[in-house]
Length: 223
Image (tube, rainbow, N blue to C red; front, top):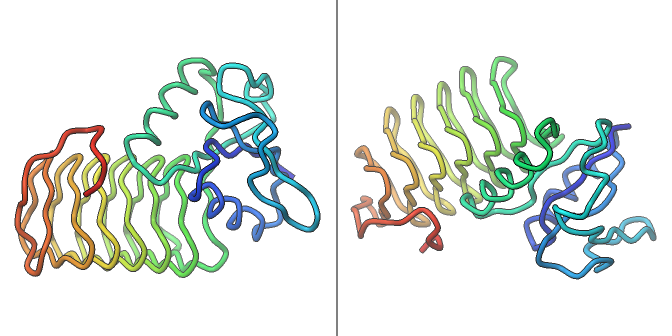
């Protein structure tokens, strides 16, 4: 069994935990979090308590060549900040992709390092998911999509074929993206929106049909 660390100890880390447990081929060491108290209990499974084992700087086990990890944080730019910090300190750290056993992934789909595919998601033929992406619960990603690194979907997102989603961009819960649409970098699509035109980078779009609301900075909250 692979030994795995989950970076982050908030609500999203529990989703990551639940997907790893179902796979049964990992041994979860614990949670790494710079902002949580050491030994805080995050989850309990079969009477075993899984705790915060420390922060990034003082957790020697991260440097163990037999240990892999995944970032359990839902916000894209925070996920990238954790990635940058870990990789600066531990240059050879191995990031693991977790693909739910309850998802449907076509055989020629490519999924990058450190990404999470949550239960009941479907990813169709020819699609490529980058590094440290999040495809959330019951998302439907049609053929030949491309999600750049650190991009994400909320639960229940639907994309048509040949959709491109830029780095750090997020498709909000229940949104629908028309086929052949390009969404730029660091752009947010509001929940339940319908996108039928290309979307610029560093922007927020929302509505049916989706319209640009305003510009967006990298480290801004989603909406």
